Amino acid sequence: MSTKTRILVVDDDVDIRELLESILRAHGYEVTRAGSGAAALDLLRAGLKPCLVLVDLEMPLMSGGDLAAEMARDEALKDIPVVLTSASREQLDRFQRSLSTLEKPFLFERLMEIVREHCSPVTQQ
Image (cartoon, rainbow, N blue to C red; front, side):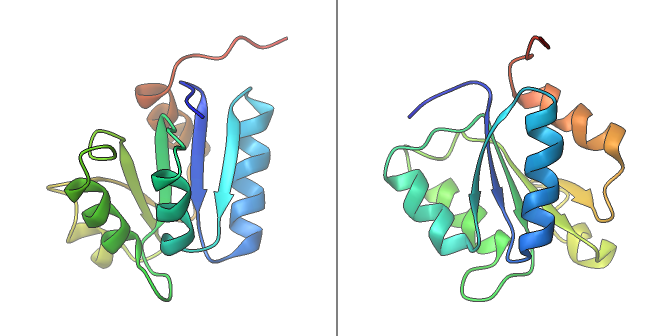
């Protein structure tokens, strides 16, 4: 389950997951969605190798920060880029030194800049 155009979108808000999936698929990327950090970690440990993980910072059970920390400790996952998303600039500021961040509401241009930075370009049909 490895691809240079697959993005894992992790958010407890189904509307945000669907919106991001729609945008990314419209630009040719493959998307896998997870509703929690724990579900995302299960997918990753089962062999999913996305080019990027877009993860909401504040989620119940396992936050985006906790997911990123778990990934960093796992040899098989530590090199997968993680971008934390949140509507709270203050919350994101705590992680800016160690992780990439993206503030909600998303600026489309910034979202796609981050995706292109980490994932292979997709040819539009």
